[in-house]
Amino acid sequence: MPVAPNLFERFVMLQLNRAPGPVLDLVGAGGERAVGLALDLGLFEALATGPATLDDVASQLDCEPAGLEPLCDFLTALGYLTRDGNRYATTPMTERWLLATDGVGPWLTFWHEVVFPFWEANMTTAVRTGAPEQTLYEWLDDHPERWQLAHEGFRAAAAVLAPTVVEKVSLPSHARVLDVGGGHGLYAATLADRHTDALVTVFDTEPARAVALETARDAGVVDRFSFIAGDYTTDELGEGYDTALLFNVVHAHDGPENVALFERVRDALVPGGRLYVLDQFDGTGRTTLARATVGFVGLTYLVTLGHRAHDVDDVVAWLAEAGFEVTDRESFLTAPGVSLLVATPAK
Ligand SMILES: C[S@@+](CC[C@H](N)C(=O)[O-])C[C@H]1O[C@@H](n2cnc3c(N)ncnc32)[C@H](O)[C@@H]1O
Image (cartoon, rainbow, N blue to C red; front, side, top):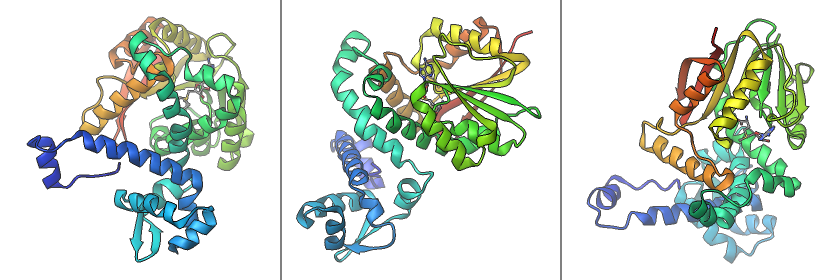
């Protein structure tokens, strides 16, 4: 994708069932491979300064024009490029979402180079046995050079949501914020940027440090940003925090593990502190895309972590077991299927 069938095609394929709907998935799978390769080759960057001929782009990318042309034409059909005679140009979608610094290019590259190859290697086992032989995080620990790609990918995904999510996080003055599993640091840095008296701390494993500090530098908040390396299941999280974030973390754990983690976070909070839990929860998708997205991430969590998108009611119950009361829930138009739970330690 984004191949968007027109009304007639939708009617014939999806309503009348007279043409094979699965072809859409075939084209979408091909699109993912084409965009992944284009990002890897630097095709979009080669066109970033303006339209160029096939021969010019081919020589910049060290490709045969005859080989590059079908790739460019497929990307043109998908809406990533336009073609005028022998010249190609980027489209507004490509400029906004793949070339801009807050675009999703690194997120797609992470999928292309790490997650989908991991799917290929582990999906059958995960579906047959309920879990992969090794989780993606364990695999990344064995291939540490790939962690950077992962954190840059997580950061690019977070960039879409961070400005909106951070608006929902209310902080007291001079707040101390702990971002547990905060990895790339974009949520913490965005909060620090918005609340100029807040001190933010990202707690994650060592491989996230370099990306997190780069994020803090780019946001101009290094002096109020710190990084603690550790394992959030066993290492000391600290204490005296007003606010804690657990974003895209609970899906990597089962109920008892999440209860234990919530308890550790509760102990790090001051009385009356707040915990924000963000994730994609089963049963929260209200639109076609939201339901498909939750299904997609649910399968991904199975293949990569041996878990699933948790039901939001289960997470609320685990929070209660750990002594939290959920006071609010938010969902986001720009991120189908993502929900934010706001919880405070019960009195
Ligand atoms: C999916 S990423 C989420 C990153 C960020 N919170 C976000 O929402 O974009 C999960 C993060 O949890 C971290 N993580 C996983 N297990 C961990 C553990 N046991 N201790 C510390 N960090 C861990 C990973 O390194 C990664 O940065």
